[in-house]
Image (cartoon, rainbow over all chains, first blue to last red; front, side, top):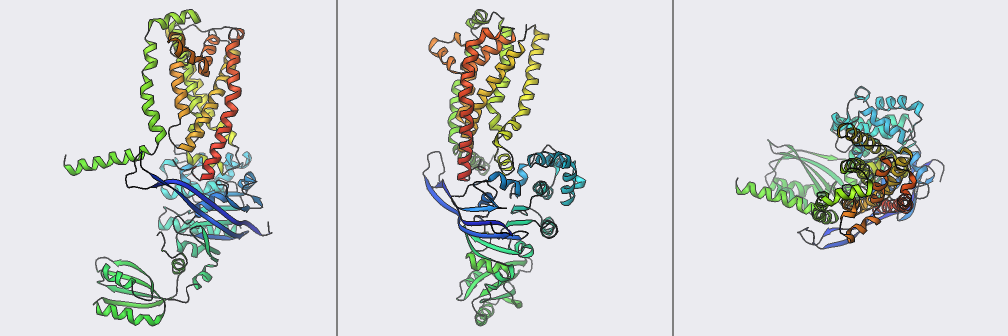
Length: 343
Length: 264
């Protein structure tokens, strides 16, 4: 392994065979099913530096969770190799597990509902080899870090969704490993909890503690706010990997215009989407009572703007505001993956 | 109730039938289980059972039944203990930690056995104090029989759990062993009361040797009295326990390879 590199992947590939696609609408006992082969991770080459906060961005089904599961030794790769903290995931799984903390998007399900937060962590501190003499101190430390110290002795079943997520993160922090693999850690959290957690990951775990964080998400803004570098995964392939600003630059060749309008119908939006030169159009309802919407148009060239405005005036759509925008990471994402988030 | 509401109920049923029918093994086992269910109770009610108990063990039917029922909790526990650990979330959490699989299995099942011991003690105490069951325990023999019997059934449990990890619901091994325990296991009646072709099956079932040996140990017989039976049980244990571990490990590896560990 290169010095200063925490995670290395060479041609890492994982393929799944499944017979879960029904060939008919009737999914009964006797329904015919098709064998399907899906390449979840496709010859991936990537290096994550020690102390780096790396964000892996991709739509649902892009292969993010599969990749995290391979890195934490839950899934064996079919081809290629992955080295975590100097240990090969296939040949030295125990050494890899001693170097990582892994949080899955459904991590809170591994907790024991009838135990308190403290008792849950006490069990996991034994599982993660935290020395007995340090356990109490370490549990209180991580509970304090995630802001759950006051709720330490409440039963887990009384925790809110945000608290459960925080406790799952506290569990991952228990063994104080140098590498953290966080798979969609903010899924299901409200805006405030999500922001608090992101700031904690960036400021406390990455900047202060110097941990290497491998962070997957399908929220573009999340990745752009906290990550040093971002990789965009699409159908198992890494289609871009750079700093957030460099990735934004990928769509510089196009132009993004925001138009705030009133009284626009869905068929009219549909017609705008199909205009020549309109790369993408994202419509957002701003005020449903007033019928106000924000249209974010990604145009091949600014010269196409008169054509769009012509359509707006001809259709008697009330124009409230218009401004030219810098492309966002989301624009880059759409350009690179050919689909919007979640599609 | 309106037609619209009835249609909703229809779609509830349709949803559950569709989901249930995807667990084919479980569906088949549940249907077969219903067919076997009544068989053991038919033998329990016969007069021949009581006479056979007296001839074989020289104890009353009451003593025979209390000891059998008390120790059947151990068998039930041993048969299902590894399956209880096969929940996908628990498996994933432990498999990403530096913890050995064997530690995980032993650790997850230890409390179940401690609790089963408490239940057995309660059964025997109530039987002895309230119903006059006569006990004269050969402690070393009892511990030896328990260790061999439980280890053998844990072997089966590992095979069952392995299959469960792969097929996801309803493992045929645990089901079969449960049926074998109730019909051929010498729990509620001696297998000798069954027609000969059926009673022969008992000699291939480890539970038969376990219950035969444990009863004799609970009434104070020496180890020599159960030597052929305990040797047979030890032989079965020596084959089934490592086999179970190998099958469980293989199934776990297969599920990990296929990425289906957390699919249930």
